[in-house]
Length: 395
Image 1 (cartoon, rainbow, N blue to C red):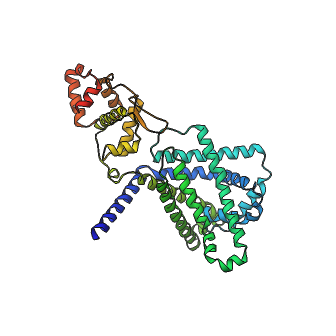
Image 2: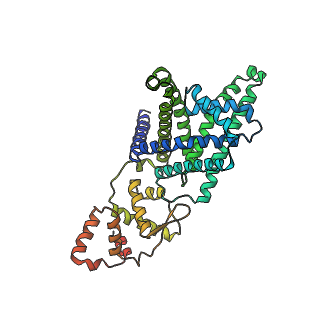
Image 3: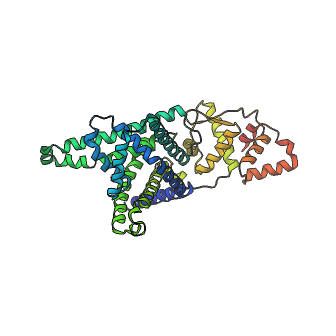
């Protein structure tokens, strides 16, 4: 029993070490700052688009106050009347917006979603971009269904909580309705982690990441609210303008937590053995990848990056990504629509000399097989003019 606990404790600690190492290596602090800056420009358009969509619901007027409280509770804890007045102003001015202004606001919201997708694709190391038609449908779904879900949950909560006989007899149901915002956050985070990256993300991994983020985000709101109320440093410095730096700080913290959740989801898909960084020589790895795809070609099947890393045990995923990019660049392999890799050349027709020079121009070659090739090139360079498949078979 003790050994089992120690084993799980070791795996748990190794997992979080790999998460924070990946968080720093992915430069998530800078990415979060970039998203925070983009959010400052896109926040008002996003709110306007959300309010415009919600206003199409007949019952929106009855839940307008609840919607404002939802925004205040999630955007900036303990923000007080300052942000509340701005929200009232937004809702008042929304009706007077011309159609061109609505289109511009929607376009800005789309650009915000595009920036988010790019950051998540970087975390998942996805190089291929989602086609514009698919991207537009996804962004439209997020921008339209998100506000509708919020409105539906708030409307249901208000409707049921208004039934006094429910308040008296169904306390458990009331408690459930009070955590609907938390459940909505869970659904939203899970949806984004699974759908926005242009690669396959397992639902259970996205759900675990979404659950962690919903809990952490809720705790962070409480801690931030306590800080803003009990340590009024910003209020002493900025006076009535204190809401501005506090708001910027909260947006930055929110994005950092969000990207940490994305890293957790990403690392959950990585087998434990592959979370340990191994310095596999790049040229050797390029040869091993070609050999693996040559074998897969015989059985007429493709392989994705995660499966490739699993087949080539203890491979650094960033190193593998660099090698795959080099092989794609020089058209030795190609990427299918399912984001899988296949051999795209006849290895018996490709020359070892050409392959070596291509890899040498793209990668840093520092392994034994490369040293042997360097020596061979200096002495009998012409002997490298042989089929690449011969070298792969001999290694």
